[in-house]
Image 1 (cartoon, chains in turn blue, red):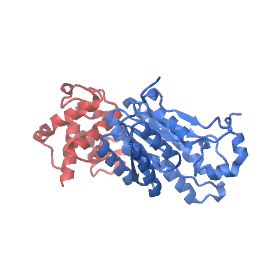
Image 2 (image 1 turned 90 degrees about the vertical axis):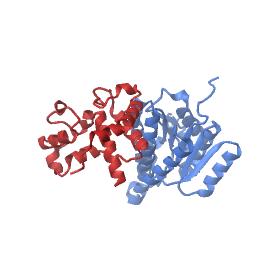
Image 3 (image 1 turned 30 degrees about the vertical axis):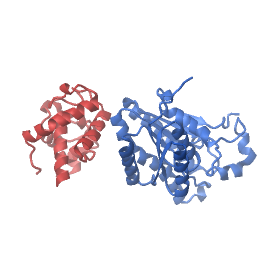
Image 4 (image 1 turned 180 degrees about the horizontal axis):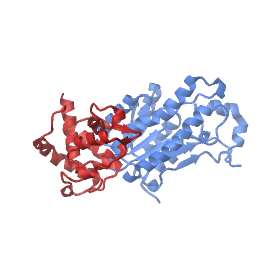
Length: 252
Length: 139
């Protein structure tokens, strides 16, 4: 009924694309016919698997090993992507790490690792992409936040602070880029069945499920649908928003 | 002192610079004259200035470091004598007026904010920016 998302042939960059939610996002964009470039930090085997799977379906995905904490590496990936596809239509800032612990036990390194990847990493890749979107006069940026930004569990001060920063970044950048019709939004997943959230789900068990209105954990693809929507032509009039994909987390 | 920029050098890059500026502003190239003020005449916003710089960097294969014009204008004048809390001093304003010789004198207002300096820029300012960056790249 709605028809074409308009994403076919679009050049999309996804960070943290080899596993978890990022992998589902890469697959969803590829299924829409986009040319996806995804970044991964370390897991070469997982990245190769994602790319091979997608290419076997006749779709387009290209893995780039790069650490988002490294601004030069981010700039290089963006330049190579532009060389391959001529432009960048969509950026999804997905890569994130978690180092949960109660505050007194959080080592400075745990705080640094989380803020550097989840916040500085977003700055690094976005700074490299935005000049291209500005000159194109178009573009869509989707940042992956978390319900933890608003409703964190115990031991998540660093992670919650990082995702709160992502929300603030999203709204501030939406203001800056609006004159060029570039939209900036965030998707805030709740508890999704990934390796990263496994320790939390294991520790919280039934208690966590009781906080979710829909009484189940989310699937990575359910987050990806929201991301694809925000990057599609259906969301041209949405900017500066945080969309929760959390099954109704703590609404009761 | 840096080598002066000749009229011929400016004329050599002007057509290309004007075309790029017109593209960045989505304007008719005929509206973009050497003396046009980017903000007052061509209705540029700050994001347009970024757009122009990105396009010029690509077009001329140059690097235009952020804040370069202000740094160059300050020259050997110590920062504290150039500006206080983001406001240009009298000496700072004099340096800027000298450096941006293409900008009409009455455009420079006392106690100007450093952040407002780009509102003074004309198309010729961008030509000079490109020429300086090309010289720096070739050095």
